[in-house]
Amino acid sequence: MLNKHEKDLRKIVELYRIIKELTLFTEQVNFKIDVQASMELRNAFDHFMRAMSSELSIQQKKDAEYIKRQIDKVCAHVIRSGYDTLDTLGIEIKKSIIDEMRFFSLETINVVWPEYYRKERGKMMDIVGAITSARFNKDSGDDDLNNFLMYAEKIKESTDMYKKLLQKKGDMIEYQKKLKEEKLKKRMFAIIKVLFIGLIGYLFAWLQYIWLK
Image 1 (spheres, rainbow, N blue to C red):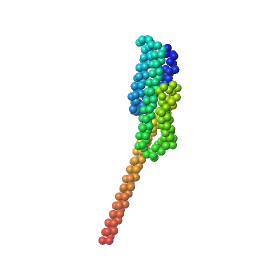
Image 2 (cartoon, rainbow, N blue to C red):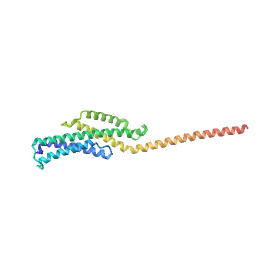
Image 3 (cartoon, rainbow, N blue to C red):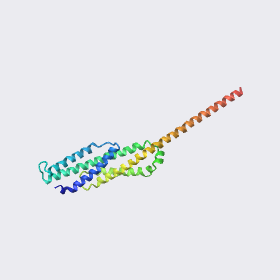
Image 4 (cartoon, one colour):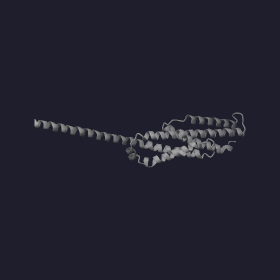
């Protein structure tokens, strides 16, 4: 009987694979895990087990309409889990990129990651705009999943950008450290220069005093 639901089951599997990939990335970079998304998956699994229990006659055999209702509920829960995952990850990535980049000077960014201002930042703004539109149009009853898949694609693009940031971060830290050391050396040189000139002035005044005396 489950063959009648192949389309829905295929959709569920495809959605789960997307959610799993994004969840693994979330865990890898220590982002916050969306509790609601996990609950939606748990509820989806519960409805799937009800359908399977009936299909396999583990519990009292239900009619085809019962199984269809359970499969439909599985789809709805998985889609909601997907949207919750995308919402949370999108917010976390945007916040993390802003927080990470604000510690680096304009010179550091332009030298180590010149594409950031020329390309990546504009791309990020386009992604944010697309994500805003996708969040506005999200619907757990979306049969063709066009909006969800577009949303997921934009989130994946933002994860790629965050990965680039992590790759560049070490070099930016080193360059920033180098800049600070150079500025400190220049400052110390300026202080020594002022002290030296002051000392020369003092010696000149003292010698002049001795000579006039």
